Length: 269
Length: 336
Image (cartoon, rainbow over all chains, first blue to last red; front, top):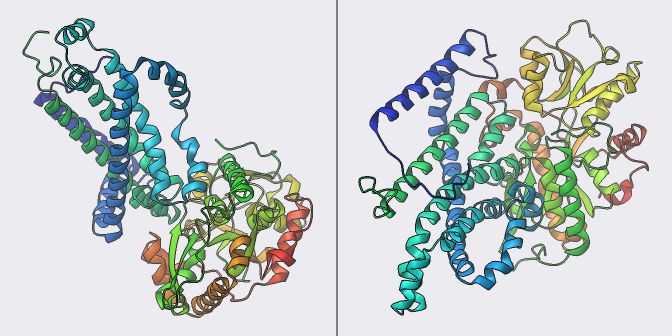
C-alpha cells in the first residue's frame, strides 16, 4: 500500500498475465485442498478448499448473509463517498490557498498517522456499536488518502501553465476548472483507489471488533460458534469484495483519465 | 498483543475475548463518559405516549448464554410489555459496559465478575435480571476444564501446568483457581495463558497449553475429540451465577417503570427457556452459526428467573480472595 507520489493510473491489461494469475490462484486452492487432506495441516482448523466452497454455498443461501453483505457494502460505499467528497473539496481549497496550506500542514501530518483502529474506544462511547462507529473509522482512515493526494496534485500545477492562465486572465473558477483540476485528477484517482481498499479494510475491522452489522460481524459470530468452514467462506467473500473494488476503481481510473499520457500509452510523453 | 499476566487487575471488564489493553481503553473512555457526559445526548427514552412501545437496545454477545432473551423476544414477552426490543450483538463484551453507561444501550449482558469489577471502579451500573447459571451437574455443565494429557486426572494435577483462560483476572481463571484449591492443590502454582475460546482447542492440540477452560459449543467439541473434562463451573458452586443483565444507574433512577417491565419480561423469558430446551436449541440457530448437530448435543446452562444472591456473593468473595479486587463488593447497591 505504498503511495506513489507520481500517480500511475491503470496498467497494461494483457491477457496472459490474467491467465497466469488465475493459474496461480488455482494452484493455491489446490494446495489448500491437499495439505489438510494429507494431514499436514489439521483439517479441523484449516478446512480443505472444497469444504470452504461448500460452506460458501450454504452462506449464499442464508438471508442473513445477504443482509450482512449489503451492510458491509453500504458502510464501505458511504465511508468512501464521504472521504472522497471531503478529501477533494478540502484538498483543492487548502491546496489553492498558500496560507491555509501552511497553517494546516503540521496538523494534517499529526492526525494522518493516527491508526484509525486506535479510535475504536472513542467511536464506541460516542456512537455505540452500530454502523456509525465503523463509519467513523472508515472515513478517518480513507479521508487522508484522498486529501494528501489532492494536496500533492494541486501543488503540482505547471508554473508555466499557471502564468499562461494569468496572461489569459482566467478567473478563479476557470483556473480551478481548466488548470488545477486536470493536474489534480490523476492524483485524486490514485487517492481514491487507495482509499477504496483502506475503507474496505476498516469496514471489516470495525465490524469484527466493534460488532457493527456486516460481514466482519458474521465472521466473528461464525468463529464464536465454532463454524470454522463458514468463517473461512466469509473471509473469502471479503477478499472477493476487495478484488472487485480494486477492479472497479482501476477501470474508473482508466475511463476518467483517457486523455492522460499515463493511460494514453501509444502517445509518447 | 496479549498483555503481561502480572499486570494489576485494573483493566478487564468482560469475560469474552478482548485484549486487556483495549478493554482498559474502553473502560477509561466509559469513565470519562460517565463523569462528564451524563445526561447529555445519552438521555434514555422516557415514558412514551400511550400505545407507543419503548425502543430498547440491549447489548448481548452471540453465545449460548443469551438464548432466553432471543427466545423471549420471539415469544412476545417483551412486546406485550410495550418494549420494542432491539438486540445488538457486540463482538467483545468489553464494548457493552461503556455502551450501557453512555446510554447507547439501555441494558446489557455481562459476566458477574466483570460487573463486580466495574462496580468496584465506581462505574454507575445496576443489575436488573439474572443471566445464566451453572447446571449444578459437574459432569454435564456448559463450561469446564478439559485436558488432553490423560495423566492429569483432577484439578490438583494442574499445578505447574499452563491453563488457557479467555481473560486473565476474571471469572474463568478465578473458577480454575478455586477448583484447584478445592481439590487440595495450590492455585498459585497454576499459570494462565490468555486465549479466545475458539482458539483454545488448537492451542492444546499444538501443545502450547496443558489444559483449557472452554464453554459451549467448544466444550462439546473438545469432549468429542476424546479429551477429558476434569472440572466445571458446577465444581466452583453448584448454583454458580455466571452472568447477569444490567443497566445504568441513570436509567434505573430516571425510568424505573421501564426497568421493571424489562425485568419482568426477562423473568418470563428465563423461565420459558429453562423449561423449553428444544426451543432454545432452535433459537440458537437464528443468531449463531452453531451447526444443527452441535446444537442438539451441547449442554445448556441453567436459567433461573431469580438472581441467586448467595452465588453472586460467593463470586465476590472469590474475587477478593484471588486478588481481583481489594474490598468486598457492595451487593446491596449493585443487585436489585
